[in-house]
Length: 209
Image (cartoon, rainbow, N blue to C red; front, top):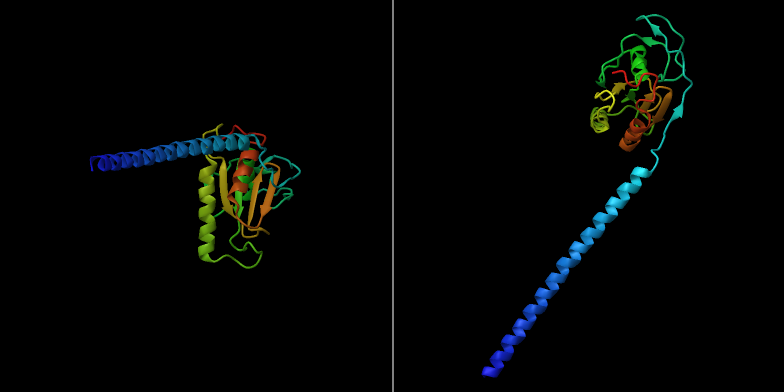
């Protein structure tokens, strides 16, 4: 009886040992897998940083950058929205607008290296009718969120970003900087952020506020 009890005790200890060993190897395997996944992520992020930023849109010929008085007639802008040309002496404040400042004021911002996001709630992504109130509010919130992600300018500690409505726009969205225009129908945050990274500051006076 003593021998059977001893054998049973040893068998149970052996089973406990095997279970503990399995748990140990599972933990080790999990840590190895996590380490490999983390290493792969670091390699991917490093690779991603080396990839060129997509340059969407097209260049627009640069027009005269003359200062004009408010209301003064000037040559027509060569794009809609404008990307360069005559402009008022005082630029607009950066930020999001429900009502757009005059084009002549915004062009001055472009000369300072701003990126302007133009949006049109009168046009759906399919090119049909206007957005509903809810859809328009959602688009506006996406734009605000993207501007926040765009961050402040490292040169002036200001965002150098403006968003304005443009109900006459022939697409739902447009992005402009000095001499560059990108139009598209459906909001794409990565596209907007890539445009900001590629073209913010690309202007005659990038260090101006």
